[in-house]
Length: 238
Image 1 (cartoon, one colour):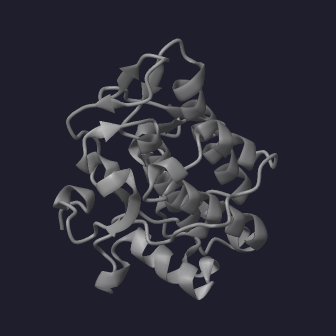
Image 2: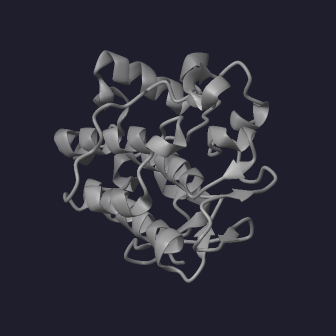
């Protein structure tokens, strides 16, 4: 692809080298439609399992194409999940990998991370940050959400700052995709409809993305924070 992979366009030092808001919208839409096709329109459901900027290729018009299916899994249409060993890239792995029972919602989570990276113009894990609390983009996202200051972490590109309302709505969509309880994440077809303005983003969102339901006695669900239990693979090496 003429313009290489998405990761080379996310982080940039000069505004003129960055992506415009319209171009980012198109890339986000292309990724969402690609995943919706894999999950719902193929004869067998395909879970990619390694969605990240390095696996999103851009043609000369910045149309995005999903690539590298080396880790993907096929699921029969009548099945909803697959049991598999942990696979993927640190920083893009959903919490349910702890149980090794995976659905297409793992791709939805990874899409949410990529969406945040595109909007914020930085990597999910950025060890060059001066403040250790800012290394993990999700930690910054949660803090700014609690403060009601989404735009503080959005790419400083002037074109991005001019579209505050649309960008803020897109940040909420990212949060919806990143819910710790995978059953509360939207399907990718629902994400596409949201991007097209046909559906509104869920409002009752949990910005503590480490909260997942744990099945206890009587099959009743309770919230359990797993942040202290997560293996280093979810954070990546320093």
